[in-house]
Image 1 (tube, one colour):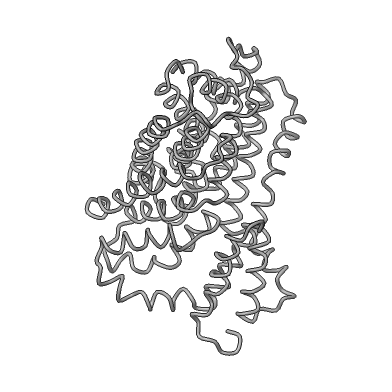
Image 2: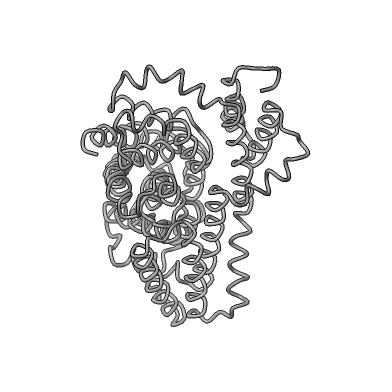
Length: 433
């Protein structure tokens, strides 16, 4: 450490990251870059070697997750270009029907969950859904705040169900558990809790809506949407391909690298079925990937960022400080405390949050009898519910898509439904798992 500082000072880059994350107008990539430089200086790393550090980071797990996120955006671009995304949303909305507010809430929840699950991205999926569902739900009086609550609350659960989403890939990587195991002990229970919370919060918001909120510039709902033959073929091809690839991945225990094959195969098969040339397919994939390249590069920087904190000995020093408290609270106390530290104490890119939680607390699992099934439940809550606790990028993005301006309904969802419900799940899991 610089100047012979105590290892605990190695946490300063992490604290700086949290502070800068709340600074208005701060780009996440700039934030991480500043913290990498700070961490390198603190741990006396030669600044001239940072290029080699980033090059090495290209083979890291975080870089793989960043690549998967980019490919998910590329697949989403192919689905939009072939009309598959519009077709799936319209099928779901029409089948459920939006003749009443309750039906509109349920239909929108289902659409958001399904498309986020298929694409593995919250913002990308809801961006596809928004212009389609807004005219339909507006016709029955759904207000923008209600839609925003649905987009974030229900939509995010799609990340907990998708075998190829960044949270699921991360949890499989740090735990060694299979997709079905994580789904049963963490993804599905947390999703059910959140669906119940979202539904009743949405009803409450609608009950107290005063009519002052309006959707701006929304078009009239189409009376009869009819997909083109190419869009119908592409939709069938996409759904069949995904089903086969997911089934094979579960059977063959395909890891995170298998996701790359899934994304590319689904994009190519869907594009060909939709009448696109191979050149047009890869142009669409690159167009989608390009929009998420900044996130991939941020993950490249996050790896040395975390490595510098580890090299400083800061995580070890922090664990030594927390050890008496964590050990004295037992299994239940440890589970709730680490979950709370994840939600309220570690704020950043979700995948990096999960990696930090695992780095800090994995050493306590065996002594306290924490099973890996319980641990993935804790980490899932700890690194995903942060987006509900603070009005950050994810929350504001969903509000923007829904034309909502009032953040209070979003915080009502968080602190009266999502956070209490998920921590109750951790408490129950500490006895059952």
